[in-house]
Length: 116
Picture 1 (cartoon, one colour):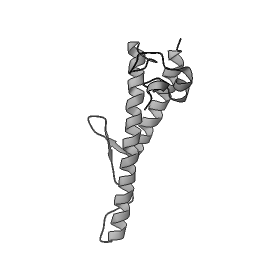
Picture 2 (cartoon, rainbow, N blue to C red):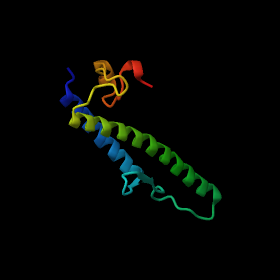
Picture 3 (tube, rainbow, N blue to C red):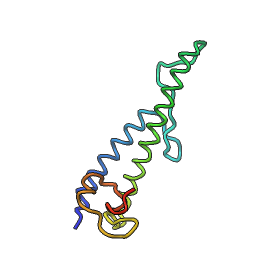
């Protein structure tokens, strides 16, 4: 039997950390997506090298935001499953997800056999 409350606490903590990290990268739009902003203090100007550095930083932040958003979606989906009673069961075969897999990744959507 899966201890949903233990995993809910872990997922809630991770969700808060992900949201905090995403907010540091930019502002969220109406859909909750993070819009990466130009870092404070970095200004575009006549120096092409400086402008290139600013754009490079923004691209790196955008990649980080995409990765964090993907993880946040997985965490939110797991929390939703807890609320609906389907948490801890493989999305492919319906079997219970192994405890060690959930300890390693509380948002895991599949059992070890079907992990991708």
